[in-house]
Length: 427
Image (cartoon, rainbow, N blue to C red; front, side, top):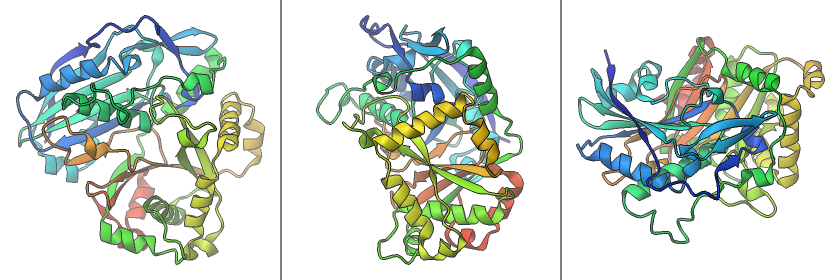
């Protein structure tokens, strides 16, 4: 049986004092509305060298000079408005050793049993009132060789794109590149609140939000499934349309069809997460750190369209139609729903099951080379949320990995679904 032993825990602070010009940074409205959880990710490397921990610590310290809010703490300044106090308190760095498990046994075993122990933060819910670290890192050395780098970051300050930028910056810093700034390595920008200023939230609203989003995940199964490049090409042709589907469209449509066959709710609602940085006018910088995303519901065109590419086309039209007007409308809907203004409309609707799809593809996770090698595998961490599908690139960049969080009994049914089994294998 695998056992993870914590060897040390320390705080990594920026190598230079935080600039006084920015003693605190306000969270944006979308940061306020983001799930109060930690986002987790795991990187598996096949080679371990004794100097790796110190190299990671020193490069992390230098990276925090640019990502200085990640070394701060969240404070409430009144009426529910939250700020990141850029006080340089630091990020948490944990060193651990794993016995009784190899990289292969972890990758192909029951992921939930070991993943949580490989993460520096062992919980999903982030409570800003605890004044805990916004960023934490754990390096776990494997007995059979190699190590796992686990990263946890508060969703209140970073979405997936922000986390990807930070990790790639950190890895370039470890290789000696990031600090020699060029047009290809622009520094991060913490300007989201200028686009979506924060609003007042009552203590009751904040508490209600945390209670709703924490949820119990005792009946939630977490699985990773793989679609290789050959199966992917077959899947992209399934719709039969003149325009071949993208990988994300094709896989999203497959999972949608399978979920419809196994879910027990009266109505299935599917929403896709859309990064809107390049959909605003003027466009926002890719270096903008924070929550720059919305959920857009994909219209269900009916079962008769499923074999003719209807789902893929519906996903494409909806996502391509996101512009600044749509973004601002969706943000207002999110705010109204959080404040309870949308309660009457929701109660009039048909009760059903809501699924969230998000793509972490083409974010450069496999580019996170800290100077020794690229990762062998990149994996999602545990989440308290249910009915979530996260899509990630396979290492070859052609296939894809599908991470599902769903009810255990429905997970068993989807694993037995004939179409699912045609394209998908367990990782």
